[in-house]
Each structure stands twice: as C-alpha cells, then as structure tokens.
Amino acid sequence: MIKLHQTSYIAGDWVSPDGAEFQSKNPVTGETLQTYRSCGPAETEAAMAAAHASFAEYRRCDKDQIVKFLNTVADEIEALGDQLLETADAETGLGLVRLTGERGRTCGQIRAFAAIVDEGHWVQASIDTALPDRSPLPKPDLRRMMIPIGPVVVFGASNFPFAFGSVGGDTASALAAGNPVVVKGHPSHPATSELFAHAMDRAINRTGMPSGLFSLLQGCTNELGGDLVRHEMTQAVGFTGSLAGGRALMDIAAARPRPIPVYAEMGSINPVFIAEDALASRGEEIAAGLVASVTMGTGQFCTSPGVVVTTANTEFEQAFATGLSEAARGVLLNEKIGQSLQAAITAVTSRDDVEWLNPVDISEIEVLTPPNCVLKTTAASFLADQALQEEIFGPVSLIVECDCPAEMRKVAAGLEGNLTATVHATKKDREQLAELVELLEGSVGRVIYNGFPTGVEVCPSQQHGGPYPASSASATTSVGADAMVRFARFVAYQDMPDELLPPALQNSNPYQLLRRLDGVFSDSAIGPDAERA
Ligand code: NAP
Image (cartoon, rainbow, N blue to C red; front, side, top):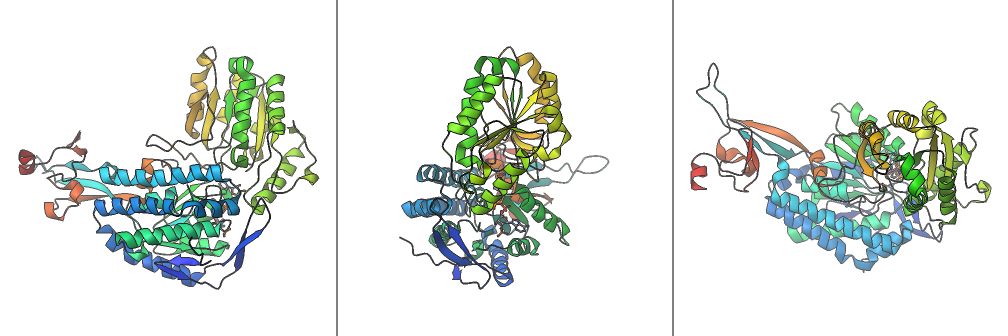
C-alpha cells in the first residue's frame, strides 16, 4: 500500500507547494477526502526546466529503451492494484467495474504506443535519392521523418481519470513520440493522480530514464494551467474538458510570442439521425439503445448522444422518455459539473420552444444525482438558435423533430463540429442516405451506422476528434496510433552524411522500416547496403 504524500511530483521529488488549498470529495457519500495545495509559478518553473533538461537525454535513447520504459509504466500502473481502483472510485464515484475496464484500456493503450514505437513506421520516413546529373539542376538527396518537439503540457480530464488522466492517452502518446510531459492534474481526483505519479516514478527509476521526463503539478487554479501553457519551454498542450477551458488555453497559446499548438478535446453533442423506415420498424429498439448510451457514465462521456434527429413518432418518444425515467440515476463526478448541469437543464426547459418529455421538479433534485432527461424541439428552433447546440454535460438528450427527410438533411447541414454523428437506417432508407452521410462527414470526426456513439474502440483506424468546437485540431486524433503525431514534427535532411542521419533514414534501413523511397513504399536498404541486404 502506497502512503500518499498529498503533494505534487516534480522530476523525482515530492514537493509541498503553498498555494490555495483544495480537497477531493467522494461524490457518492459526500465525504471529504485528501487535502492538497496548489502549485504556483515556482513549481511551474521547476517542472518545465527539468522537462527541458531531460529532453536532450531522452532524445538520445534508442527505441528499445523507450519501448521498455512505456511497457514498465503499464506494469507499474497495474502494480498499484486495488489501491488505484479504490482511490479513484472514492474520488469519482465511477464504480469498480467501470474503473477496472478503464485501467485495462489505459495500460492497453500505453503498450500499444510501445508497440508502435518498436515497429517504427510512425515516423513516416521518406527518402528521395540524389540525381547529381539531372539537368538543368542536380537534385539533392532529401530525407524526411518525424521527430519529437520537446516538453508537452497535459491537462488530466475529470471524466476519464485513467484513460485521459495523468498518465492517460495524451501523456502516453507524448512520451512515446519522445517528449517529456508535465501534467496539470485534475483537481477532482488528486490522490488518483498522485498514484499515477508513483507508478511513473518507479518506471523512470527502473529503466534509468531522466527524472525530468515526468512531473505532476496539482492545483485548483486557472493561473497554474495558464502559466504552464505560457511557459516558453512548453512546446504543445493536450487537453480534455470544457469548451470554455479549452478555448481559454487555445487563446493563451496563440497569444504567446511564439505560439504553440493546443490539442483540445472539448464539447460535442453527437447527433443521432434516425431515418423513417428505421424509426417505424425498430424505433423502440433504438430508443432502448439510446437510453443505455445517454445514461452511460451518467452522461459524462464526450461521445454521449446529446441530440436525436427524427421525424415525428409518438411510440419512439414514449419509449425513449419512459426508458430514461426508469433507468437508475447515476452520480456526477463533482459539484461543479452538477451545478452547471442543473443550470443548463433549468435554462433549456424554461424555453417556450423546448418540451420536457419526462419532467421532474427540478427544485427537488440533488445536484450530484440528476434526472435522466429527454427534451424535444423543432428543427426550425434548433436551426435558429445556436444555444440549442451547446453540450449539456450529463444524462440529457434533445429530440429535434423534423417534418421530413429533407428537413433532417437541413439539420445536418446546420450542425457545428462534433466528434461523432450516427445514422440509424434500413435498406429501404438507404437511397436517401448518401446525401445525409456526405453532410455529416463535413462536420464530424466519426460517422456511425446503426450503432451508438459511446464506447470508443482504441485502434489505429479510430478518429477521436472533430471540427471545432469538438476539438481544436480536426486533422488529429486523441485516440489511436496517430495520437503520437500531434507531438512530433517533420524535419528534412538535405545531402546529410549517412552517419549523421537518424537510423530511420540511414541507407542500411537498420529498423527495416517501410519507407517512401523515391516515391514508392519499400523496406529496402539503399546503395551498397541494398546489395548486402
Ligand atoms: P474544465 O473546467 O474545462 O477543466 C479541465 C482542466 O482545465 C482543469 O484542470 C482546469 O483546472 C483547467 N482549466 C479550466 N479552465 C481553465 C482556464 N480558463 N485556464 C486554465 N486552466 C483551466 O473541465 P472539467 O472540470 O472536466 O468539467 C467541467 C465541464 O467541462 C463539464 O461540465 C463539461 O461541460 C465539460 N467537459 C467536457 C468533456 C468532453 O469530453 N466533452 C469532458 C470533461 C468535461 P482548474 O479548474 O484548476 O483551473
């Protein structure tokens, strides 16, 4: 059993900052848990300086060392055993079953990044050999690949304390790409974050990595996050949270003398479109699936289906409303989320153009155990007011009732950026679908057919990110193999002697990579080395 220090962790040391005090709370029992203090400018400076110093050393590690390190991190997270699950359950109320699954996903994704580093193709090596006799000008030898960028700041998410927490997908992908990481832990679960720092500390020591490779700054103030993003040594930012928070950090990063990218995953309403024949033939089945998806994790999933677009169908509406009313109420992560949900439900249900299909007396609702709500509006209202497209974080879904399939397409055309869109259809519906799918792919990162948006498969073909405001950089993904390329950049070497090139670009192709060689993918060596191969 690890004894918690109730502090932050900077480059191998447990430090005691003297900033604002904050406490984690058990959202189920209301019990106050550990007390922590916020880091300030001194800790920001120390962590960033250590990260910067460790970068040069980490860059010199070969890929086998990085692979060993990442696999050891996953082993050490598992070695935290039940203490991690119980601590996170107390701080989040997410339950041991969900957290056990999330731990598996977290360690699985760290090991998957290790395998990608081991395989090596992610650097996208490309070689154009010289043509010294080309006329009128000779062509130089050009070789290009991705390299790490330097210290990355990661904001741990509240709703995925493991998979997007202190050593979640953003941290793992940044480390795998060859960068040190400084984490701003989420103030809702500081003890969970601290346990992850223990796992990192052991992995760093066991594999002989530089101590500045990882720091965890705990805190409850916007100033700490802002200072980390502003710091001149920070090269990029990974963030999961609110649109307001993500946007504030994007603006800070853009206003720096030397702007840096912020990879922020923010709000999404994940519209579900139900075509006419699907609605008529299996509306109740779809309603049951939606109930499960909306209530999953008390609606605190970035892929929760916040909007359902259909033509009128009373049976479907009733099945959806009854199912949500009968489903057990979940517990929200913290009071801040509960209060913003209560405010959002109050605001939306007081509108004349929104009907609450399963109403309850809002004044009797405990802030952490909200009702599972289904609301209804018209397509005209939805299209006229952007406010109806704002994410309501919690178990709430809004039916947008359309007159006809053409109006459903109008709704699709008027959507803001989202992580996902879902289409439910039958064979009969299909001839109307091509246009709808085309409209949806213009504004989302993932289009789902006859399924539900929650439950994000972690694999190389996954796309988790969409046009703003779903995320800040829609060309990238925060889940899957390509998450690493967010924290790397291309560099080209012109006429560089072979021994000065990184191994991925050397003639002998020591890693046997699939490289773009004079425009054609090949795992061959080049020149005399090719003859030897
Ligand atoms: P949040 O308020 O955006 O906070 C996330 C992290 O960013 C925290 O560490 C927070 O730290 C920091 N932060 C927020 N605003 C900042 C600012 N202006 N400057 C510097 N740092 C800032 O998100 P949350 O606490 O997880 O949840 C609150 C709301 O976010 C939810 O109600 C929900 O609407 C949304 N949310 C959405 C998703 C999604 O996947 N779509 C996921 C989680 C949350 P400090 O508070 O200590 O500054």
